[in-house]
Length: 318
Image (cartoon, rainbow, N blue to C red; front, side):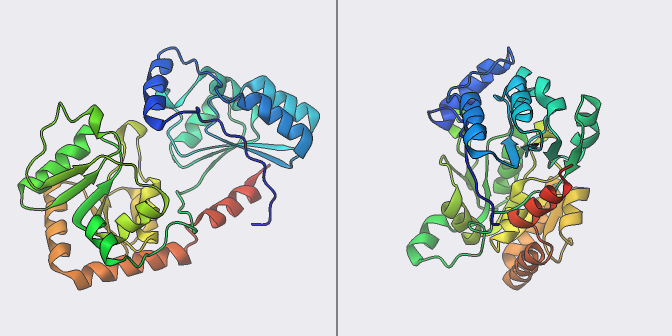
Protein backbone atom coordinates (compact mmCIF):
# COMPACT_ATOMS: atom_id res chain seq x y z
CA UNK A 1 0.00 0.00 0.00
CA UNK A 2 3.05 2.27 -0.17
CA UNK A 3 3.95 2.34 3.54
CA UNK A 4 7.35 1.45 4.95
CA UNK A 5 7.19 -1.06 7.79
CA UNK A 6 9.27 -2.20 10.73
CA UNK A 7 8.01 -5.41 12.39
CA UNK A 8 8.52 -6.54 15.98
CA UNK A 9 7.69 -10.19 16.70
CA UNK A 10 5.90 -10.84 20.00
CA UNK A 11 5.34 -14.59 19.61
CA UNK A 12 7.33 -17.03 21.80
CA UNK A 13 10.42 -18.66 20.21
CA UNK A 14 8.94 -22.17 20.02
CA UNK A 15 6.06 -24.12 18.52
CA UNK A 16 2.40 -23.15 18.65
CA UNK A 17 1.47 -26.31 20.56
CA UNK A 18 3.77 -25.56 23.49
CA UNK A 19 2.62 -21.91 23.44
CA UNK A 20 -1.02 -22.96 23.84
CA UNK A 21 -0.15 -25.08 26.89
CA UNK A 22 1.96 -22.35 28.50
CA UNK A 23 -0.60 -19.67 27.59
CA UNK A 24 -3.26 -21.71 29.38
CA UNK A 25 -1.13 -21.94 32.51
CA UNK A 26 -0.24 -18.25 32.48
CA UNK A 27 -3.86 -17.23 31.93
CA UNK A 28 -4.67 -18.45 35.43
CA UNK A 29 -2.61 -15.60 36.87
CA UNK A 30 -3.08 -13.24 33.91
CA UNK A 31 0.71 -12.86 33.78
CA UNK A 32 2.67 -13.22 30.54
CA UNK A 33 6.39 -13.31 29.84
CA UNK A 34 7.92 -11.10 27.15
CA UNK A 35 9.96 -13.90 25.59
CA UNK A 36 11.29 -11.89 22.66
CA UNK A 37 11.84 -8.62 24.55
CA UNK A 38 9.17 -7.07 22.36
CA UNK A 39 8.82 -4.01 24.59
CA UNK A 40 12.53 -3.24 24.34
CA UNK A 41 12.48 -3.78 20.57
CA UNK A 42 9.38 -1.62 20.20
CA UNK A 43 11.01 1.33 21.96
CA UNK A 44 14.27 0.87 20.07
CA UNK A 45 12.40 0.65 16.79
CA UNK A 46 10.39 3.78 17.48
CA UNK A 47 13.55 5.74 18.27
CA UNK A 48 15.32 4.63 15.07
CA UNK A 49 12.33 4.38 12.72
CA UNK A 50 10.29 7.40 13.87
CA UNK A 51 6.94 6.02 12.69
CA UNK A 52 3.69 7.83 12.04
CA UNK A 53 1.73 4.79 13.24
CA UNK A 54 2.36 2.03 15.79
CA UNK A 55 0.05 -0.90 15.05
CA UNK A 56 -0.18 -3.53 17.80
CA UNK A 57 -1.76 -6.89 17.01
CA UNK A 58 -3.39 -8.31 20.16
CA UNK A 59 -0.88 -6.63 22.48
CA UNK A 60 -1.02 -8.92 25.50
CA UNK A 61 2.71 -8.41 26.15
CA UNK A 62 3.03 -4.68 25.49
CA UNK A 63 3.46 -2.62 28.66
CA UNK A 64 1.43 0.58 29.14
CA UNK A 65 4.48 2.59 30.19
CA UNK A 66 6.16 1.65 26.89
CA UNK A 67 3.20 3.04 24.96
CA UNK A 68 3.25 6.18 27.12
CA UNK A 69 6.96 6.54 26.41
CA UNK A 70 6.28 6.27 22.66
CA UNK A 71 3.71 9.05 22.93
CA UNK A 72 6.14 11.14 24.94
CA UNK A 73 8.89 10.75 22.35
CA UNK A 74 6.64 11.42 19.36
CA UNK A 75 3.38 13.17 20.33
CA UNK A 76 2.02 12.94 16.77
CA UNK A 77 2.38 9.14 16.51
CA UNK A 78 -0.90 7.18 16.38
CA UNK A 79 -1.26 4.05 18.53
CA UNK A 80 -3.69 1.46 17.15
CA UNK A 81 -4.60 -1.85 18.77
CA UNK A 82 -6.10 -4.55 16.55
CA UNK A 83 -7.51 -7.92 17.56
CA UNK A 84 -9.52 -10.57 15.68
CA UNK A 85 -10.57 -12.13 19.02
CA UNK A 86 -13.14 -11.37 21.69
CA UNK A 87 -11.10 -9.20 24.05
CA UNK A 88 -13.68 -9.62 26.83
CA UNK A 89 -12.87 -13.34 26.97
CA UNK A 90 -10.42 -13.67 29.93
CA UNK A 91 -8.27 -16.05 27.87
CA UNK A 92 -7.64 -13.20 25.43
CA UNK A 93 -6.65 -10.71 28.12
CA UNK A 94 -3.63 -9.91 30.27
CA UNK A 95 -2.98 -7.38 33.02
CA UNK A 96 -0.73 -5.46 30.65
CA UNK A 97 -3.38 -5.28 27.94
CA UNK A 98 -6.11 -4.15 30.33
CA UNK A 99 -3.87 -1.43 31.75
CA UNK A 100 -2.96 -0.27 28.23
CA UNK A 101 -6.49 0.15 26.91
CA UNK A 102 -6.81 3.92 27.64
CA UNK A 103 -3.42 4.66 26.06
CA UNK A 104 -4.27 3.64 22.50
CA UNK A 105 -5.79 6.22 20.19
CA UNK A 106 -7.92 3.59 18.43
CA UNK A 107 -9.03 0.02 19.12
CA UNK A 108 -10.06 -2.01 16.08
CA UNK A 109 -12.16 -5.13 16.60
CA UNK A 110 -13.87 -7.70 14.39
CA UNK A 111 -16.36 -8.36 17.20
CA UNK A 112 -19.27 -5.93 16.91
CA UNK A 113 -20.32 -6.45 20.53
CA UNK A 114 -16.81 -5.48 21.73
CA UNK A 115 -17.31 -1.85 20.64
CA UNK A 116 -19.54 -0.91 23.56
CA UNK A 117 -17.69 -3.21 25.97
CA UNK A 118 -14.26 -1.74 25.19
CA UNK A 119 -15.56 1.80 25.65
CA UNK A 120 -16.96 0.82 29.04
CA UNK A 121 -13.51 -0.25 30.26
CA UNK A 122 -11.65 2.82 29.08
CA UNK A 123 -11.08 2.69 25.32
CA UNK A 124 -11.05 6.18 23.81
CA UNK A 125 -12.13 5.26 20.27
CA UNK A 126 -13.31 1.85 19.02
CA UNK A 127 -13.95 0.78 15.43
CA UNK A 128 -15.67 -2.38 14.23
CA UNK A 129 -14.52 -3.92 10.94
CA UNK A 130 -15.62 -7.13 9.28
CA UNK A 131 -13.04 -9.84 8.79
CA UNK A 132 -10.75 -9.78 5.77
CA UNK A 133 -8.90 -12.13 3.46
CA UNK A 134 -5.29 -11.88 2.29
CA UNK A 135 -5.26 -11.05 -1.42
CA UNK A 136 -1.84 -12.67 -1.87
CA UNK A 137 -3.00 -16.01 -0.41
CA UNK A 138 -6.76 -16.41 -0.63
CA UNK A 139 -7.70 -16.77 -4.28
CA UNK A 140 -8.99 -19.67 -6.44
CA UNK A 141 -6.34 -22.30 -7.18
CA UNK A 142 -5.76 -24.66 -10.09
CA UNK A 143 -4.66 -27.89 -8.46
CA UNK A 144 -2.54 -30.63 -9.96
CA UNK A 145 -3.84 -34.20 -10.01
CA UNK A 146 -1.54 -35.02 -7.08
CA UNK A 147 -2.86 -32.06 -5.07
CA UNK A 148 -6.46 -32.99 -5.82
CA UNK A 149 -5.79 -36.54 -4.65
CA UNK A 150 -4.34 -35.18 -1.39
CA UNK A 151 -6.85 -32.43 -0.61
CA UNK A 152 -10.20 -33.31 -2.20
CA UNK A 153 -13.18 -34.18 -0.03
CA UNK A 154 -16.96 -33.92 -0.05
CA UNK A 155 -17.46 -31.88 3.12
CA UNK A 156 -14.57 -30.38 5.04
CA UNK A 157 -13.64 -28.12 7.89
CA UNK A 158 -10.24 -26.64 8.77
CA UNK A 159 -9.91 -25.38 12.33
CA UNK A 160 -9.43 -26.10 16.00
CA UNK A 161 -11.39 -28.64 18.00
CA UNK A 162 -14.59 -27.75 19.82
CA UNK A 163 -16.97 -30.37 21.15
CA UNK A 164 -20.05 -28.84 19.50
CA UNK A 165 -18.57 -28.60 16.01
CA UNK A 166 -17.11 -32.12 16.34
CA UNK A 167 -20.56 -33.46 17.30
CA UNK A 168 -22.07 -31.73 14.26
CA UNK A 169 -19.54 -33.35 11.93
CA UNK A 170 -20.23 -36.70 13.62
CA UNK A 171 -23.92 -36.17 12.90
CA UNK A 172 -23.23 -35.61 9.20
CA UNK A 173 -21.05 -38.72 9.05
CA UNK A 174 -23.66 -40.89 10.80
CA UNK A 175 -26.15 -39.76 8.15
CA UNK A 176 -24.01 -40.85 5.23
CA UNK A 177 -22.05 -37.67 4.44
CA UNK A 178 -18.28 -38.09 4.15
CA UNK A 179 -16.53 -35.39 6.21
CA UNK A 180 -12.86 -34.50 6.61
CA UNK A 181 -11.91 -32.57 9.75
CA UNK A 182 -8.44 -31.03 9.44
CA UNK A 183 -7.70 -30.33 13.09
CA UNK A 184 -4.28 -29.07 14.28
CA UNK A 185 -4.87 -29.94 17.95
CA UNK A 186 -6.54 -33.35 17.60
CA UNK A 187 -3.93 -35.18 19.73
CA UNK A 188 -5.24 -33.32 22.79
CA UNK A 189 -8.76 -34.73 22.32
CA UNK A 190 -8.59 -38.03 20.43
CA UNK A 191 -8.49 -40.19 23.57
CA UNK A 192 -11.81 -38.77 24.72
CA UNK A 193 -13.74 -38.79 21.45
CA UNK A 194 -14.55 -41.72 19.22
CA UNK A 195 -14.52 -40.98 15.49
CA UNK A 196 -17.65 -42.09 13.61
CA UNK A 197 -17.30 -44.01 10.36
CA UNK A 198 -17.42 -41.51 7.53
CA UNK A 199 -15.51 -38.84 9.47
CA UNK A 200 -11.78 -38.54 8.81
CA UNK A 201 -9.64 -36.47 11.17
CA UNK A 202 -6.26 -35.20 9.94
CA UNK A 203 -3.99 -33.56 12.51
CA UNK A 204 -2.05 -30.89 10.70
CA UNK A 205 -1.75 -27.12 10.41
CA UNK A 206 -2.98 -25.80 7.07
CA UNK A 207 -1.87 -22.26 6.37
CA UNK A 208 -1.12 -20.01 3.42
CA UNK A 209 -1.12 -21.91 0.09
CA UNK A 210 -2.00 -25.28 1.64
CA UNK A 211 -5.11 -23.79 3.25
CA UNK A 212 -6.23 -22.20 -0.01
CA UNK A 213 -5.71 -25.47 -1.86
CA UNK A 214 -7.76 -27.40 0.70
CA UNK A 215 -10.64 -24.93 0.31
CA UNK A 216 -10.43 -25.11 -3.47
CA UNK A 217 -10.49 -28.93 -3.42
CA UNK A 218 -13.40 -29.24 -0.95
CA UNK A 219 -16.90 -29.42 -2.40
CA UNK A 220 -18.64 -28.05 0.72
CA UNK A 221 -16.59 -25.99 3.17
CA UNK A 222 -18.15 -25.77 6.63
CA UNK A 223 -18.05 -22.47 8.52
CA UNK A 224 -18.26 -23.03 12.26
CA UNK A 225 -18.11 -20.24 14.85
CA UNK A 226 -16.16 -20.32 18.11
CA UNK A 227 -18.70 -20.08 20.90
CA UNK A 228 -16.23 -19.01 23.60
CA UNK A 229 -15.45 -15.99 21.40
CA UNK A 230 -19.16 -15.26 20.82
CA UNK A 231 -18.37 -15.30 17.09
CA UNK A 232 -20.80 -13.94 14.55
CA UNK A 233 -18.23 -14.24 11.77
CA UNK A 234 -14.58 -15.32 11.49
CA UNK A 235 -11.73 -14.86 9.05
CA UNK A 236 -12.84 -18.16 7.52
CA UNK A 237 -16.15 -16.46 6.68
CA UNK A 238 -14.48 -14.43 3.94
CA UNK A 239 -11.41 -16.57 3.23
CA UNK A 240 -13.48 -19.51 1.94
CA UNK A 241 -15.45 -17.50 -0.67
CA UNK A 242 -12.30 -15.55 -1.58
CA UNK A 243 -10.63 -18.86 -2.48
CA UNK A 244 -13.57 -19.66 -4.74
CA UNK A 245 -14.88 -22.24 -2.28
CA UNK A 246 -18.50 -23.05 -1.57
CA UNK A 247 -19.28 -22.07 2.05
CA UNK A 248 -21.98 -23.56 4.28
CA UNK A 249 -21.75 -21.67 7.57
CA UNK A 250 -23.71 -21.04 10.74
CA UNK A 251 -26.41 -18.43 10.16
CA UNK A 252 -25.89 -15.06 11.87
CA UNK A 253 -26.95 -11.51 11.07
CA UNK A 254 -23.35 -10.62 10.25
CA UNK A 255 -22.96 -13.57 7.88
CA UNK A 256 -26.19 -12.55 6.17
CA UNK A 257 -24.83 -9.03 5.83
CA UNK A 258 -21.67 -10.28 4.14
CA UNK A 259 -23.28 -12.70 1.66
CA UNK A 260 -26.73 -13.24 0.15
CA UNK A 261 -28.08 -16.56 1.37
CA UNK A 262 -28.59 -19.10 -1.41
CA UNK A 263 -26.80 -16.88 -3.94
CA UNK A 264 -23.33 -16.12 -2.54
CA UNK A 265 -23.11 -18.55 0.39
CA UNK A 266 -25.32 -20.94 2.31
CA UNK A 267 -26.17 -20.98 6.02
CA UNK A 268 -27.74 -23.26 8.61
CA UNK A 269 -29.30 -23.05 12.08
CA UNK A 270 -29.68 -26.73 12.93
CA UNK A 271 -28.08 -30.08 12.26
CA UNK A 272 -31.01 -31.12 10.11
CA UNK A 273 -30.82 -27.99 7.95
CA UNK A 274 -27.06 -28.49 7.59
CA UNK A 275 -27.58 -32.12 6.53
CA UNK A 276 -30.25 -31.28 3.98
CA UNK A 277 -28.21 -28.47 2.42
CA UNK A 278 -25.00 -30.51 2.38
CA UNK A 279 -26.80 -33.35 0.57
CA UNK A 280 -28.44 -30.96 -1.90
CA UNK A 281 -25.23 -29.18 -2.92
CA UNK A 282 -23.23 -32.40 -3.14
CA UNK A 283 -25.85 -33.74 -5.54
CA UNK A 284 -26.12 -30.49 -7.54
CA UNK A 285 -22.65 -29.34 -8.61
CA UNK A 286 -23.96 -26.61 -10.92
CA UNK A 287 -25.84 -24.93 -8.06
CA UNK A 288 -22.82 -25.34 -5.81
CA UNK A 289 -20.44 -23.80 -8.33
CA UNK A 290 -22.82 -20.90 -9.00
CA UNK A 291 -22.99 -20.00 -5.30
CA UNK A 292 -19.21 -20.30 -4.96
CA UNK A 293 -18.58 -18.07 -7.97
CA UNK A 294 -21.01 -15.40 -6.79
CA UNK A 295 -19.46 -15.50 -3.30
CA UNK A 296 -16.03 -14.97 -4.82
CA UNK A 297 -17.26 -12.00 -6.85
CA UNK A 298 -18.88 -10.50 -3.74
CA UNK A 299 -15.53 -10.62 -1.92
CA UNK A 300 -13.87 -8.66 -4.73
CA UNK A 301 -16.67 -6.19 -5.45
CA UNK A 302 -17.40 -5.35 -1.81
CA UNK A 303 -13.75 -4.94 -0.82
CA UNK A 304 -13.40 -7.74 1.71
CA UNK A 305 -9.60 -7.90 1.26
CA UNK A 306 -6.96 -6.70 3.71
CA UNK A 307 -6.06 -3.60 1.75
CA UNK A 308 -9.60 -2.21 1.65
CA UNK A 309 -10.10 -2.93 5.34
CA UNK A 310 -6.79 -1.28 6.23
CA UNK A 311 -7.60 1.84 4.23
CA UNK A 312 -10.85 2.16 6.17
CA UNK A 313 -9.00 1.84 9.47
CA UNK A 314 -6.27 4.33 8.59
CA UNK A 315 -8.91 6.87 7.58
CA UNK A 316 -10.58 6.41 10.98
CA UNK A 317 -7.49 7.08 13.11
CA UNK A 318 -8.13 10.16 15.28
